[in-house]
Length: 305
Image 1 (cartoon, rainbow, N blue to C red):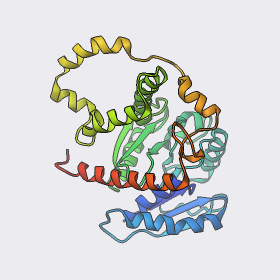
Image 2: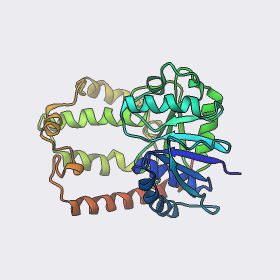
Image 3: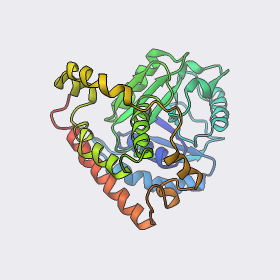
Image 4: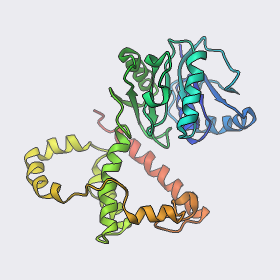
């Protein structure tokens, strides 16, 4: 029997997560403050779900008011996906702490705030945790599950199994670290990449090409740790002895990108970043991006681990 999943928030992340569970046969309840807007999102979620592999008919999709909906009898998991506003998340968790029966896990899709920070002082924090999907959620296979200082390990493991049953991979982080695992690794790469751009040694396009057509090309086939197992840790230690001392250790983003943000050049959403973007160019780029992700997803199914 597929139990109900409650998703709070109807943006890109909420819609993608709802689609995943619906495609896996779970009834999904989408909660928010504007029910009329939520209703307009249901066809979008249904369309996303239709693009996913399914062994059974999709689960039902229902929209309801987050302030009044209270039918928790068959709910297996609640995930909030509201905006990254700490005060709003704290207020939401405080409300859920009292309204949601204490055996039901409550997750936050945030990677910027740890569950302890969002739930400080609440009474049922043993069932609260970070459940972080990466965008686009319906395509990216990995989901990070991170425990707080009081999260029940058996409950966290149960959430992982529930998510894995939808076809996703999970990693269980037993103590929150800023950025969790995926964002943290990305920032390590971006610190070095932006430092090199800031020094004028390479261009943003050079960085993208080096990752996509160099070492990043093989990461869908095997991760960096397995790759070093194959190539030899002795080689890594030898090359690292000369490379590590020259790597960037800056503690804040460099001027090349900080100045862009000050100028309002935040990327595609503002029409400009390092490059200029028209709405048509953005739409075409996103279409190519999703096509590439789908192709990479197919690679993951070749001789699986």
